[in-house]
Length: 235
Image (cartoon, rainbow, N blue to C red; front, side, top):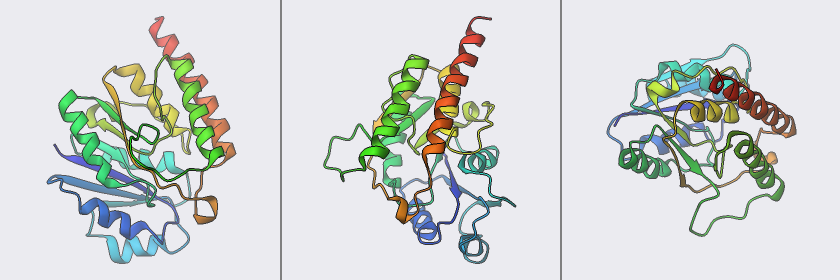
């Protein structure tokens, strides 16, 4: 299996080199790394241009800040792997968990594998109540509107067969991307699996970017995509 890793980057000067180091250290023989800088202003962009070009397969640059959803949409068409996964440019998620997801993909011939922060069976760090409750509420609403049983729609770790992913019509620029891409996956395949992953939540003072505005946008996208999917089924 060839795995393409798309890494959206925005103001991650502290972590961007380390996360690439961790991804490259994985025991995956055929690995492609595509980074998209979403107009970083903290020095990240200069590190990418001066130190990291040549260390990864491709680095793409936005000329204005557009949002995470826009960054991954920029990266997806450049992926050439059998599967494509999204990796945030911080250290909240552990790339070692790719191996669990790849195992599920290979054993089940899955079209989609999500890494769930809420399915872990081991000791985990305590997470912030409101952030966790918000994630679970959005997931609950998604399940209600789409008749699914996800445990973590908002997870970063989403892995898709490339042909399926590149057939999606994605438009969301910020964190509405998560329910949007999930809804399109549900509309096109039933071969979707989840596996438990680890999660080391960082706090807003440490650079976390998602906020209440993104939660309201996610709710809007859930309803919009449910109506669209229902309309397609009734045709």
